[in-house]
Length: 468
Ligand SMILES: *Cc1c(COP(=O)(O)O)cnc(C)c1O
Image (cartoon, rainbow, N blue to C red):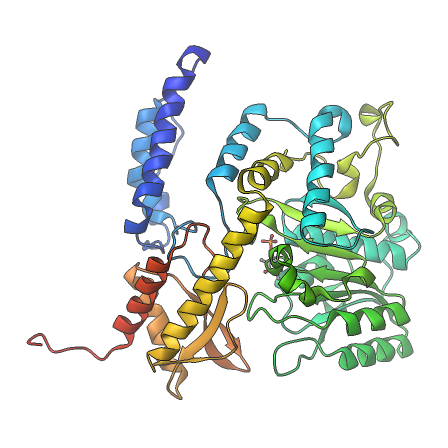
């Protein structure tokens, strides 16, 4: 065990390891190149009986663990979505672990509850959210969406489902492009996955409000109870933006809870020029967006905003004797604002990042990345080898190889990812293979874009003869 008097020296070793990791990150293969079971087999089958030194542990970290890591902080990581960290966030996380507070209720750490309240207010103001929204930090967008579905369920059943069980026939609606967490949430909330209604999208993968209204009307006529609509602002596949104003009008007409999933794209609201993507948000009941995606705060940190926190607390509060406190009712006891009782002090890293970057610092980095993405799109188009499937949007480009054959794009993607030089992912757009690219890693530079363009072109080119 490390003792107090050795802590600084031992911590310095870990800090040096972290510094070396960032220094050498660009040299590591972005995507792990291991076979299933390979890392497992390198780890001893039993824990050591006696304590080992930090030096030994760090050696094994390099030898056994790092080869099996896909490096999400690598500037050539362009796949899926960003899961950004930053030096500020990392330091905040270290302090959080040092304090190790359990932030269940106000009394178990008043500063954690009050900083959380302030941070949700700072972000709401910075993102121009409606003044009627109140925030709380959850662990993930999946949890936030589950919380929204359960609250909608309680509202639709007069708060009886919690007591008596879920009645049959409650319905939830989302587009055919919505995130899998909606379907999972509907199942976990006890509504039955078959009661999730997938609404058809238009040519740009946006939910069709006319189809939504028809589905709701048909359901009402058939005896179902519409409980919740989940609109996506930036779908995971193609960053499609559902038309919120029209969807909100339908929700209002039929008195259905409207939850907005902006898990990735929500960070764009820091930029006033992108706030149009949530026009109509003031009519929504809840919103989720993840600072742990594009806001330089490392996982986990998901912001959940609700118009009516009483509805939320009525859904989730439960009061065992040992948690009865004199301050109840005067303070926010956040265990009543979500599912787990135990809560991490996530507000602290948000505080470190918001102060360390400043709002303008965050905005500058977002605009730089948006510009880098446009630069990427221009370059691949200029090569004559690729077609864009959408204009570049936020830090994201959707494209394919410029031939009428999906196999070419599929092969290229596999070759690039196997090269270790860059990592991109794919989706299907109207049934056809499409390559997804994000220029959103925290410390990405123009040189990294140049390198990825080069890697793409190198892997697409027909093999050269060795004499050339
Ligand atoms: C990433 C993503 C999610 C899931 O986020 P988690 O925090 O990992 O649960 C949900 N919805 C959208 C649109 C996303 O991009």
